Image 1 (cartoon, rainbow, N blue to C red):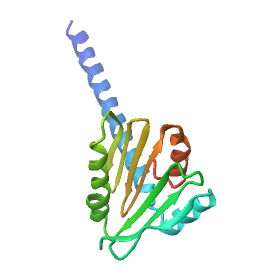
Image 2: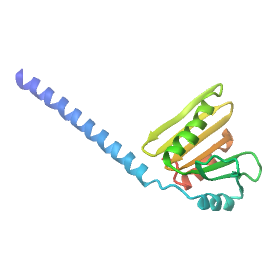
Image 3: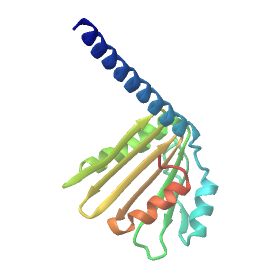
Image 4: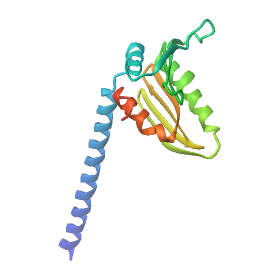
Length: 168
């Protein structure tokens, strides 16, 4: 009887150990992926989307906030959607002045369903579906990409964001 109890305890400890090892491996794989994400430059953003037929324009002017280094808007040829790119002076500016402000504005939408809300180190990803639209806001270090698209464009836009390596 005692050997049977010890065998059960040993089995439970082995299962707990394997679970903990699995969690540690999973966390390290996510951290490795996050650390491998390199922020794109404004030139890479402009070039990639220009090659895909988007019209690129600068969103910077005299009234632009001081925390912004660059800001561009890429408008689709059919003018159904755009993708905004912001580069800030610091990571904190990207988080508080761009990502969190945009996230806060989206949170006010009616009939929304949060699809993803990820925050790891210098990477944030927020995706919401509301009223047949998909809102995506991604921060990677000092850069933020924002788009609001019809749900039928979701696959196309996510493909572009994956090319930028901005989707985990």
